[in-house]
Length: 103
Image (cartoon, rainbow, N blue to C red; front, side):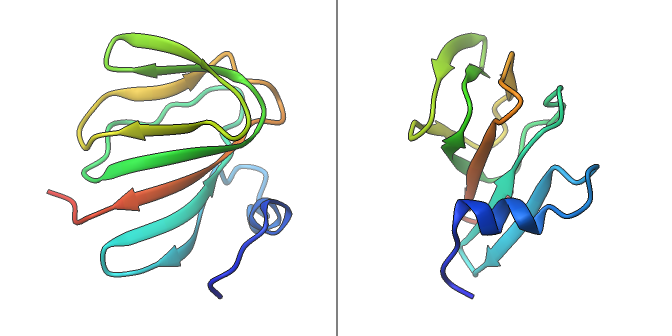
C-alpha cells in the first residue's frame, strides 16, 4: 500500500512493546511510524532520516543541541548523528523517513 493515515500507522504497531513499524520499503527510502514508550533509546542510524511529528510534544536532542518539537514539525538527522526524543508526551508519535543507502 502506498497511502497511510496516522491512525492506520499507529494501528500497525499492534504489540505494546513494538515501537517502530516499517510501512513502506523502496530502493532509496523507507517510511515508518515510531512511537517510543517512555524512553527513546535509539542509536545513530546508517541512513539520513526525516521525522515528521504526527502527535505529541517534547524535546529533540541532536548532536549536543536540544529543541522543542510539536505536531507537524519536520526534523532532519544526518546519518551517524546521535539523536533522540526526550521528555515527550504520552501521545507522541512520528513518521520516520529513512533516505538513501546506509553506509
